[in-house]
Length: 496
Image 1: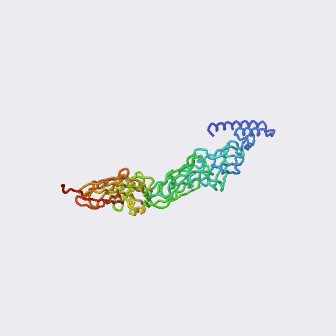
Image 2: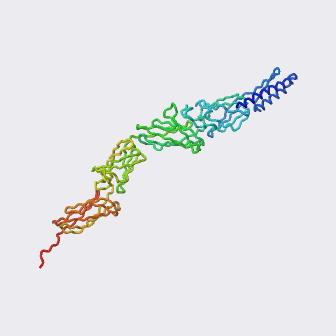
Image 3: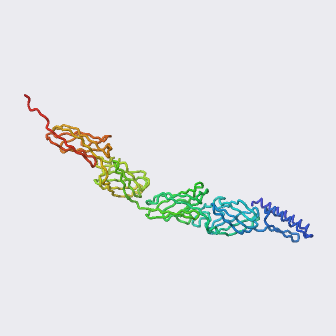
């Protein structure tokens, strides 16, 4: 009631008293009650409580007016909706009463968090449709009133709730009721983007708040706790590792982040909405390489290095065969930090720092059953992780075909040497082939296959020794051999 309304009320009361005195003086000697009835009618009209009990007394020409105070006899809850609705029963509410108290005595919060929406009221009944009015809403929360460990304005089964009604004259009635122990409650889901992570990894936590399977169309407070690690959200003062986040007012979805601790172990994260908790566990592992999965259906092979703690940027992987040949393969960025996929072998040689490809002249290739060493360096922490894996013993290898070599005369004569390098029936281009012979030489002893997997060079016969010699073409771990016949060159000893 504002100041103007108060002044009108005071002036009206003065007028009412004057009228009542006049009426009383006129009728007092005859003992009639007409004056009292007139005053009562005027009071009911004036205060807007046409059905609220009003009593008057006349004593020596002085009138006294009394409006009966409201009383509450009971509260009926309807918990089939969110928020709940309720009906307040009683007497002498009048027509302009207000609900001035709706306090959860168990959880210690009241109308500062919610405002009831009154849909109808009579002198004996007030019906409240929902509690979503005001600046906050039912199920929301803040850090100031957080004291029950859940952080939201919502009644829980068995809570003691004080209801207060104040009539137009400022007279208040209160009543304490129990929120139904069988009340239907909402819930939230909780999903972690990963439940097995490395130290200091970031996990996305998400969920949805619903009531009876339907989205709640108001923002709601979801509170999170963790037995280790760090949660994002609004921190609750005086309550370590308790944070509050809000759901979307349209979809009911919410999300936040969790940062795993630097100590390996299993940690529990709990999300709670309106006192209904749901939990998940997150296992934090120490950084390590746990295995290598090979794909040997291509040449070069590809592989997936599994583990955790690889990091997400600046990763270096040193991969080395049993002969000490290998390459440094970097991957930046890398997501997630528990897998490293290697499929390209144009990498830096660990022997000379030059760019090399798999199967190059340096001898960098894996043979069936060979031990392969791995070292992964986390670009963010600098930590090195080592692992040794065995190249599959049944891994297919390339094939080298060496075509028949034509006979050649001794004395430094040349004859073509040709062949093909294939893998699983497919030509291998840009593969280096090394040629050798038991006697003689080549115009080029190291050649490279063309787009169709073919290679060629010339064999140069020895200068003075005829015979059959072996020519070998080797590509990676495979080779082929052909014989070359070196014959004595025809000569003319005389002409007659």
